[in-house]
Amino acid sequence: MNDVKNKYIRNLKIVSCILIVLVFVLTLVVVDLISNRFVKSNTNNAYVEVVETYDGFLLGKDLDNNTKYTIKTSDTFNTGDVIYVTYYKDIEKPKSIELVLSKKTEDESKDTKLETAEVTTTKKVVNNEVVTTNEVTTKNNTTTKKVEINENIDSIVLNYIDSVKTKVENYSSNENNKKNAKEYFCGIVDFIFYDGKIKGHTFNELSTSAKAKVIYYTLILDSKIDSKFPGYKDSLGDKYNDIKVKLVGKYLSLVEYVKTKEPELYNDLKSDFLLLKSSCNLTWNIVSSAFKYVGGNVVSLAKEWYENFRG
Image 1 (cartoon, rainbow, N blue to C red):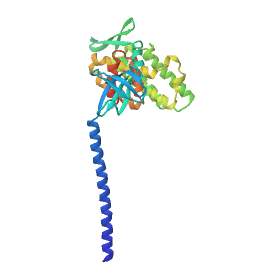
Image 2 (image 1 turned 30 degrees about the vertical axis):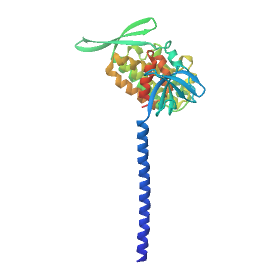
Image 3 (image 1 turned 90 degrees about the vertical axis):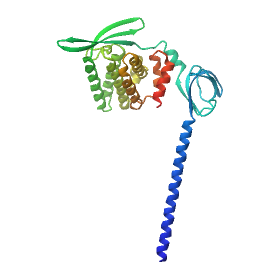
Image 4 (image 1 turned 45 degrees about the vertical axis):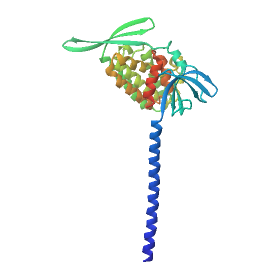
């Protein structure tokens, strides 16, 4: 009888201990949820332009309402930089500060904008079939040229890019494959930026959608090659310096173009770009540096993309 009683008491103690632990864990979870909700509901943000810098603080101007703030920080920023400030009640004592756009990039954007293109789509009947063609007007500094293109070219070029990507994915890590991968990459970059040809066609002969896909897959190709042959671009020469940033800039230029010219493509191009954040290890530093190749109001551009990129 005593054994049964002792066993019952022992089991009761075990159950009591388990219940106490469960209550404790649940309490911690509830407190954490309440704390997170409180923090989120009491967290404020502001885009601020750095006006002056001092030892231990800076003077900044809110880009939305022009209010000036004195903000404590041990980080180093330059006059003209755009920063994203997260704070609770007092912006002068921020929770965090992140660089959104450097003044250097904003200045460089005035001189380094990439070539733009405007596309006029027309349809005509040829041999009882509707043929879609695009008249593309490209502008680079003072030169303007027009070229009529056919949408069938899109498939030819994209199939080639896809075949290159498949080859590289199957490459083993040896010097011969590294050489071939570099040649493929340089050929595609020349196609995008330097009037190179793929299967007899130029980049400007593509539709806007196909152009975006070519750049998208080129960025993925670059990451795949770099994973097999780290630092492979180091020996490509000056022509290919900063090429990842240029590719991102070219893509962002297309996104900005379709926003008003071909709005039906905007959401798809924007969503595809955000996928590159993980698949190509895109950092905000790379993206913000690319704005110098986009042109326009780079501060507004940086604010818009920062909201998307950090989400």
